[in-house]
Length: 433
Image (cartoon, rainbow, N blue to C red; front, side, top):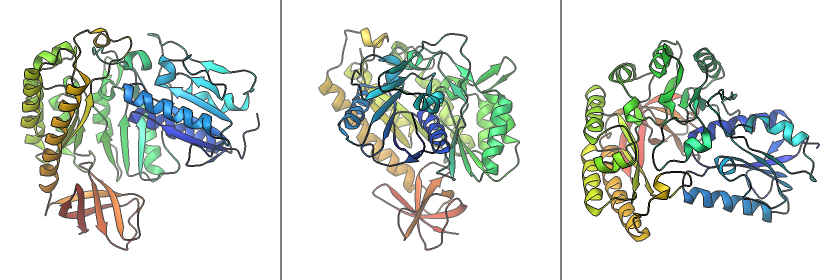
C-alpha cells in the first residue's frame, strides 16, 4: 500500500507508557511521509492505542473504534495495545484491518506498507519469561519541552485486581547505558524535562548489581540544565536512599512522587495482594516530607473493592485524610478478566461504589486546595509549554501543578522562577521573578 502523503489520526488511552509508545509511533509515521490530523474522523488511517485497565476505559476504546468505523474518510483502523492484547478477536468489523498486541507496535510502518484490504492482520503474541525489552525512539518531534522516556515494561506482581501482567507480560528493562545515552540525546535536542516511565518504573532491573537505585544515581550525576520526573512508583520499592538522592538535588529531580496506595485499610491492602501496610506507607511519606516539606505526593485509590465493608471504607478514608495527598486518582472497582478479584462473589454495589467515589472526591478537592494555597508567596520553577492564549503563558512546576503567568513574553521551553500569587478554582497564578 502507498502510504506517503496519506493522513492519520491517533488516539491514545491509558497510562504514560502508552503515551511514550504513541509518541514513537507518531515519529515513525511522520518520518515515513504521513501527515497527522487531529480528528479521528478525518484521517485516512485511524490508529487507536488502547487500554483495558478498567471497564470505563474499555468503553472509551470501543467508542473510538465505532467513531472510526462510522467515518467516511477513515479507510483503515489500526487497533493496538492492551485491549487488543486481551481481546484480539472481539472486534470483527472489516474496517479494523490491523490488530496488534503490545509486542508488535514497533512494526506499524511495515505493516501499513504491506497491508492488503483482502487480508486482515491480527498479530497478537502471548508474553513469555524470555521476552526482551522492546526498544522505542521515546520522544515526540512535535513537543520540544517534555519527553517521555520508557525505561521498563511489564509487571511481575500479581495484585488481585490487576490485568496488567496479562496485557504487558513480565518485567523487562532498557539497558542502563541506553537510558543514559537517550537522556543525553533528548537534552541535546532541547528537552528540559524528561519523564521516566514504565508499567512498573521502580521495577527497573538490568542485573543483580544494577537496578532502579543505581540508574537514579547515575542520572543524578549527568551534567546539563534539565530535570527528571519519575512516573508512578510502588511504596515497597522506594528506599530511603532513593529518597535522599531525589530530595538532595531539587534542580535535577522534580519534587513530585506518584506513590500508589490503592486502599488505606490494611485488610483490603492484604486482600489486594499488595506488599505494605498503612503504617509503612505513612512512615515513608513522613520521611519524604522531612527531606522535602513541599513534596507533591499523589496516589491512586480504588473504592468499592470486593469485601470492602463500610467500616473498611471509613478506615481508608480517615487514613487518606491523615496522609494529605496533593491529588488522588480515584477509581471505582472494575472487575477484570483473569484476575482473582474478578472472580469474587462478594461485590460492593454500583450505588455504594459511586457514593464512596464521591466521598473520596470531596476529600480530595479539600486536600488539593490546601496543598495549592500553601504555595502562595513561595517560589517554584516552571517549565513553560505552548501558550494556550496570547495573554497567559502556562507550564508545569517541579511539583507537577500547572502555573499561569500573565505576560506577553514568550517563555516556551524555558525554566523560570515564578512567585505564586493566588489560586482560583484550582488554577494557580504567579509572576516572573
